[in-house]
Image 1 (cartoon, rainbow over the protein chains, first blue to last red):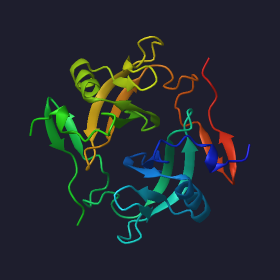
Image 2: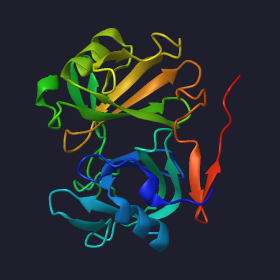
Image 3: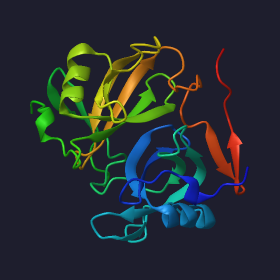
Image 4: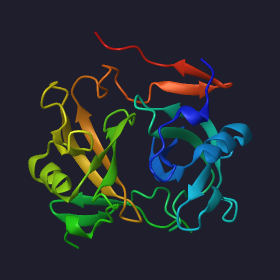
Length: 119
Length: 119
């Protein structure tokens, strides 16, 4: 079946969550949002492209930082309302310069920082 | 710093997306939603508990199917608006009986099914 990005189930803002996972290590790097055109641009260019809700514009990941995400595989979930992109990540994925945005764990009721910013 | 679930950034519906990842294999299993109380229940019980948007009720994963998720680690992202739970998954995570909800890949413009339902 050919893929048509218009068949995804976007929320009332026209967005779907997209989870980025490191294709080599399996580490979950970040979650951001895509609209239909961001999905299409990601597939066409091989460069993971989100929709920035704060800036209301396309966000080619790494365009300013150099921390690009090269698309390895794009997956759709059973409800067609969430995406998983596996990527080759250049540099840290998080804007704090940590490898992953999920660097804080909750353990025994306390927040524990698991990663330091890369230098 | 002690963790307070009220400090997460919930959307206008009072929800945050929660990504479930197999703690052993790193496979991303599903994405669902939690409200503040679902986060607190998950941490207190060790059984991953979502908020079902369709049923408007708590959804203790596996309560009816037996396909429970035992919490291994709960992580908060840099923006505090997304969670990652690593879990020990009993049985398939997806309601289609597939291991993961992300069983459809988009390759060369076509949808490709990567997993079969477990029997």
